[in-house]
Length: 377
Image (cartoon, rainbow, N blue to C red; front, side, top):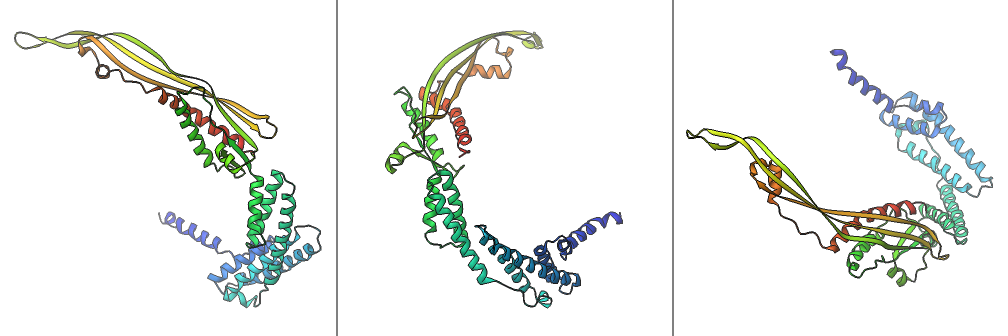
């Protein structure tokens, strides 16, 4: 029992030792920056750790030399993005210096860690200049794909230099140039009677598209919004109930002969129970009202007027009701059958409600279809 009780302590000890590594393994693998960080962490908790002091001295020297070598090579490179490499390396060197300066015992082996603040800022500014120019050139190509790439470049500029030139305006211009603008036209239903119900369906769809966030490069507008903004769309969605039937009624009657044995049917003169069989005839009525429709969805390119995709989405709703009556002895009925005889025929929902109900599964399919199609843009 004593052996098993030591296991949790032994595991904890291993975890502590693993967490307090001196960075020696990282140094041997050539991960100099990681070796510096691990050694610094160890020395903060154990300032006199000789192995960590040795690792820090070697790893810092190697990391500094390696970073400066990469910077020198990048400076003579023809890579248009070379300043980002330079910025990254100066950033690593500066972070190492900050780590060491925050550890008193580390300064014993690296008394004056080098920092390149001005050089880093210069590289950051030059990186922003390059990305800004790339974004400008891409934006001038006037295509959605080039605008997407321009947006990515402008966002990097803002990340590095938040107040750079007119970067906020450029980001907005690039974003709207990269967005696929889709106009959702009103649903067509060839019935004035069901206009109100189709309007409800339309509202549900518009609520979804207004809050659509699955792809930031796609924006939906109602026809009214597009006209108000004088928007030239990229695509148009047309919706039409090609066919629908509301209120198909079916009534079925099922007659059952029931009997139950060993039921008390009377008493003898000396008041003893008399058992026998009771019977009844149960009539169960089932009413179903079926409503269904087919929504045609057509997505067209605005400029060419060509259909780019289309689909038929079916929906069905069946309202049901049941009740029963019987003749004979009610004791032949079980509890559920008896309860059913207590019910009366229910008034079905009005046609406008039935119309709305069969559009609910259509709405779900439409949302899935929309998400699937516009995920590619």
